[in-house]
Figure (cartoon, rainbow, N blue to C red):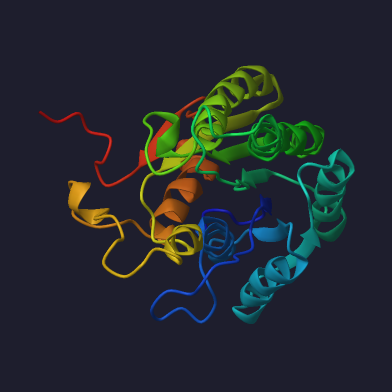
Length: 266
């Protein structure tokens, strides 16, 4: 028996577009790891991603392992594509119970160096995109008898460093969006929670560090109490818990997955 047997999951941002890590057949980011981990626990998974090829690779990995999966292209800035991704999951698997929003884009600009256009674009993807997918998924989830949503925020929602003001602001705003959604979706039997990853050895981090000259990369692990970066699989495990019935009385929560990086220290 899997923890998600009989459930249908839509993972938005379930592809992966960075370099692979050691031992990876395909690159693994938080979204792809979540899709694969949930499929192993019995969920039928619709993988949505801006890159159709990346979504297709994740779905193929699931099917190769004996699971059920489909893929759809989705630009979360487009309300029609968000609606279409939900419809694709319902059409393929007969309903929708679970939603994971893993979409996010980053910047490095500060207050004076960020253009209004950049700020608007990042907010459109990182916040408005989550609103749109939840908006379209909730009726289907209510019809299925309830379910769970997990939004992927970041430790940058709580502290700054390593990213720009637009990214930090968007990830903090996502906490408010999730809390409001949790309060209002509860009547439909839908739980909404947020995961806040810290430094994760994911495709996103590898892509960000790709152009840093050798010897100049920041000592990320040295600032983490557990002494290492996390893995996408550890993020996926947190998401899986929040999606499962083990978290049936958990909603509106914020789960930090950071190896202790956010612990206040003298």
